[in-house]
Length: 315
Ligand SMILES: NC(=O)c1ccc[n+]([C@@H]2O[C@H](COP(=O)([O-])OP(=O)(O)OC[C@H]3O[C@@H](n4cnc5c(N)ncnc54)[C@H](OP(=O)(O)O)[C@@H]3O)[C@@H](O)[C@H]2O)c1
Image (cartoon, rainbow, N blue to C red):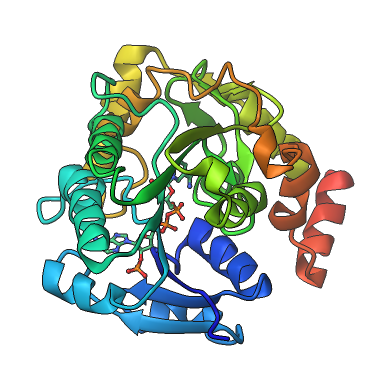
């Protein structure tokens, strides 16, 4: 019998790589769609995975790529918009086109990644565009069985958030923090990936939206303290007022590498936490951040161990 074929858009990314590995292990045939095959080469060794190049913003190309698959998982997202690419194009127009293509091709299953706190009246364009994407999908839920996931920040090996701050803690004498009291409820990438895979064939998850959060709420300041504790590095931390947070983000927008934007700061105006318990239907007990981040933040190479011993010895 032919393996059920699942197409993963954004399968090369941080969350995508975890989802694809679990789909492969569960015996699905996985088609990873990427703009550049090179970015997905780490997935090529998985036995049931094929990687195909496609410009997903081109409706015809996307339609040709999706033809014949049984289900689609959409993980495509951006944290910073540019002159060439807007949040609206990626988070709203793309899901709108995608669900229409699914309906036209008779692909009846679609899982989609949104974000916790995505609301059409949210303070940031990122969150607004994610909400518009959700609405566009749900408009066709009579034709396609849709499940939407809304996680808080996601941590795990290769994450952008915890690794970025670990790097700042390692290399800067002082940590200057925008929105130090903003709240997060971080969730482990493997737990998120499990929910996607378990949802795929579970009809009870059709037409449902799930918030995914970890077991503990942290302020931004507490998160950075946890990173420092894990690395065994202490740095003074300066929390910025709202006004200075926006000024810092504005200056960062001028840098060639995008670390933080004013829109990111606006996203932190709402706490990324949930009042709802973790959805029982997936049988996942969410893993604590403290149990996981030492595995990927602490450098276990001989050089890393040597540096650690020197720090312990204060030399
Ligand atoms: N990480 C978090 O903390 C977090 C929290 C809440 C929600 N989310 C959402 O989860 C999803 C995955 O996040 P992630 O952290 O795994 O992000 P990621 O590592 O940056 O991966 C994003 C993926 O999107 C694809 N992509 C980006 N821009 C694209 C474009 N212009 N056209 C086509 N494809 C594009 C990339 O594929 P190629 O480069 O291979 O083409 C990449 O595989 C996103 O929707 C994000 O908004 C993430």
